[in-house]
Length: 97
Image (cartoon, rainbow, N blue to C red):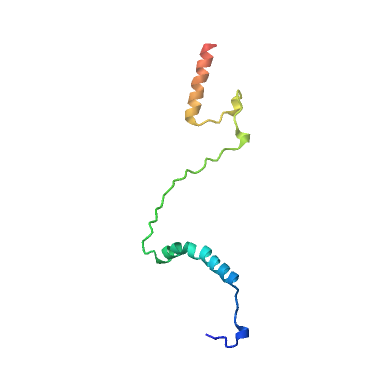
């Protein structure tokens, strides 16, 4: 470490500058000294918890050109169970006529 032997090259601070440097150190470093000490010297093991979230795959809608038109017999595109239910409803409607 080099020392300054000539007094003209020495760093001279006024009393106000020394007070400002001390205030800055007090506000910035020493204010959080306990936090720094805890972060650097904490020997406790951290506990990691993991949560598994099951996601359902999105249902992809069919093309709107294949959509059913109410009252159009040619647009029947139901699955088997829905088709049998629709036939039962048609039979009941025809019986009422």
